[in-house]
Length: 265
Ligand code: BTN
Image (cartoon, rainbow, N blue to C red; front, top):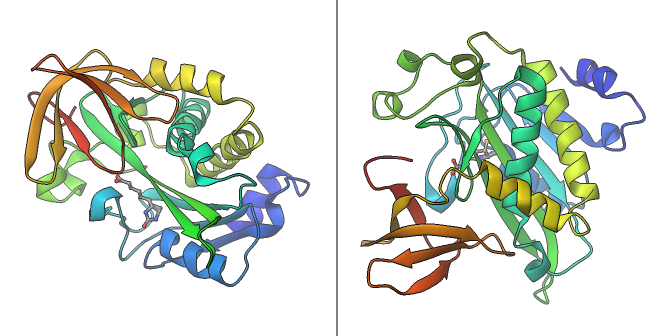
């Protein structure tokens, strides 16, 4: 895969020398963290055909069977502080939609904050993790992207069968790993180039793709459930909600997850 991917991207692709493809790893995000600690540069990309311990947001797992999905982590060393990067997961979600649209002709939606969806089903997700220097400055950001590529509904574990989808299900035909990975890397490179200067345009795309906006939702925080309507996504990627008691507040992705009133979306 590695040579074919470099050939598809062109050897002048700026991240070509920092591309690592694996058959099987625990988690590309975990491995990226280990590489970051050893000094791996900005633009290091890890791709795996299989993860034995794929990780999702809020401590969940990400089902990552062999040769069925795209499992990718990108290591960035942004020259800014963490506050200026609060929109990174949103930017990665828009980049993933762009890549999927280019690779298979269908643009998925985004369920705030980090889920890629097709109709009422989850197609993939994004896990962004930050690393710090000893004196508390931002050392790196890892953007982990997992996309279900070839599964049919019966291939998912029983508890996911009614809510998970794959690119094959969305496109009605199989999409090879190589063109999808190629489009994903091209999109992520463009995202990185525009991360700070293109924030307003990116957020406009995010709001267009975000299927949560306008919906009646449940906001879940630990054991607490609150009901409201999703109004907007703010500059930091937070979700502005009008709760049923009339108050309007913006919730941050690190604290909560949302569900539709009647199911996953
Ligand atoms: C989520 O659904 O909450 C986020 C899922 C993110 C999964 C990807 S797969 C590649 C990278 N490595 C991981 O362990 N997780 C991310």
